[in-house]
Image (cartoon, rainbow, N blue to C red; front, side):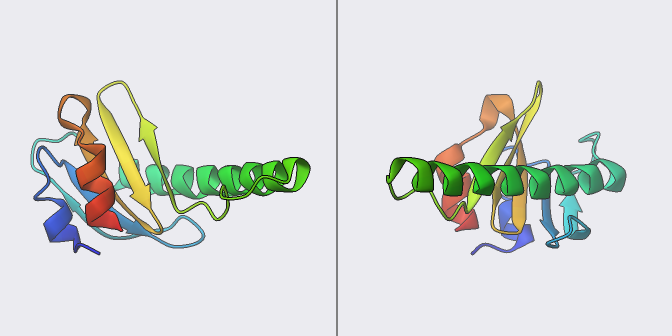
Amino acid sequence: MASLDELMQLDGAIGAFEFSDGGELGEHRIADGSGLDENVLDLLCHVCVANMAIATMQARGWEKMTGMAGFYPIQGFSLVGFEWTAIVHDHRGVILPNDKADFDAAYAALA
């Protein structure tokens, strides 16, 4: 798993962050001029926890209702916005501008 400094080396990275099970922002990095701040990252961390909980509920329900396997456990997801995308795995994430978002590279670095 890449460090936050290594995540910031991904092409175009404007932020990298860690968060707790409760969504509290932990260690983080923000690129100068990105328009991000700690308040934005704090809200994003809470969104990440909420989305992981919902995705986990859906994956478990789908497996139980259909008998199909392989959807649970949820380990990560991408949250695509108008200007940037947050790519999250476990309790870490990186924020990339949409025009430079390399999902494969980000997930490889986060895994």
